[in-house]
Image: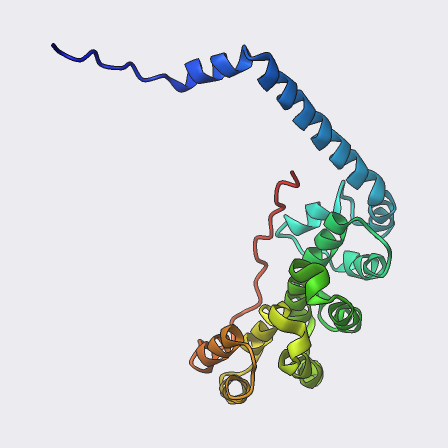
Length: 219
């Protein structure tokens, strides 16, 4: 006896079935309510930051507008550094740090980012410390390099140093290879050692570029 073939359910049919399910609609409404409440909380938290940016001639609806733009915003950097020292929601602090990870922050952002990196423990917030390390690497000038190297060598910063060590990419090839060699022989973390070794034979110093730093869905 021949078997009857099962008809495949189309995506449209599946969606229609879900939409007809009261429990599914209830959960969907609840998810939307939570999302709206979260967005309202963030907007309230960063209201003063948005106003201060506007006074500096930078008009945005959120700090994340800066994170997602490819246009330079030098006038925003002092405002961002001021708010880095203030109390903000974790998501807004992340946006501030990401927005400071740009070439125009060099020369003026190092001290504040250096203090911020040291103030965050790996156990407290690894991801934020990791992001601050990337911003600090971007802001480091040759005269400040010894301070950053001390941070890279300090085991208390753990894997929060993973982006910080990328500061070596911005050095002239010969100096980069020398310092990377010294670090690969002294670092405590195998991952950092591997990165240091890869930088010994890495390409010449790249031209500064603005990377894509898109916002993640908060929920």
